[in-house]
Length: 345
Image (cartoon, rainbow, N blue to C red; front, side, top):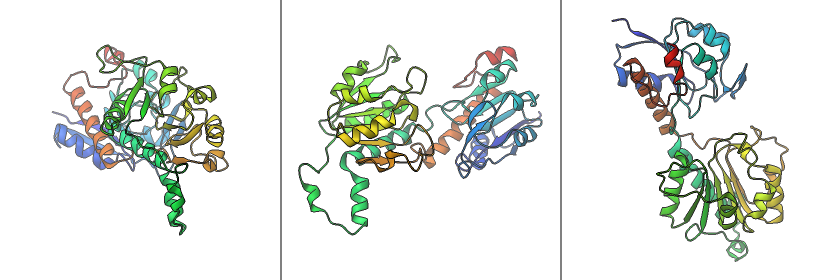
């Protein structure tokens, strides 16, 4: 039986070796004939390639590497309309991400190319990072760390007006209750926090009910964002929403930068309306070195790496291999982004 031709287009996070190891474990080393293309991310930032976004590499290299390939597994490769049109043998693309932002799904569907993703791959990492940022902001850990490094020993930080707050007994509002939000809620429960959730798309059998956003904001000492970015959610936390929060509240965003009006955040931090803010994502990435957010008080900032753990990369490779295995066995693969593509084939 001829072996399936697979292109493994890994990078320096979800590597070629991880993907090949997972494919071999799922299907056996003799089932596939794999070629590799190593993309430069994250050492070279991702960006727009033709009509797709958050992609790494170039169209010409990908087209050459796809010659004869029936299956492609990648995290960042730019599967544009031009690339898909040049890849006659291709039947399946598995994207090792929560969403296929670097793939022209419509063009793939028109050509009968199935597109799968790996949702939940980074839920554990992102949830843990969210709580780490939240605690860092509540206790001012970045500022305390910098103070000790500078040779200071500020016992005045024990003053009532300077010391931080506890999670226990606090109300935390989660905006969005997908895989990451649910895990954050479980972690917060272990801290004895009260958790409110706002998510208008909760399934009927969800273990929580959705609180109206205005009520959640007014009741929450901490608000953490876990919503997807859409036209509906873009800019959903602006000056009016921040003003509705209790004075001195904390805002956390590890979801997407477009959810938040960052100039409004800077103003609220300066006025004390926000007591602290913790961000892993920003409206523009990388952040402009002149951005006032970088010098705003009481912040904890990381460079969009909430999902960056060894286990996330391993999990993404395993989930991708599971999708490839299901497809090659004639089953409907999990997390299929375009079911209509199966009908075209």
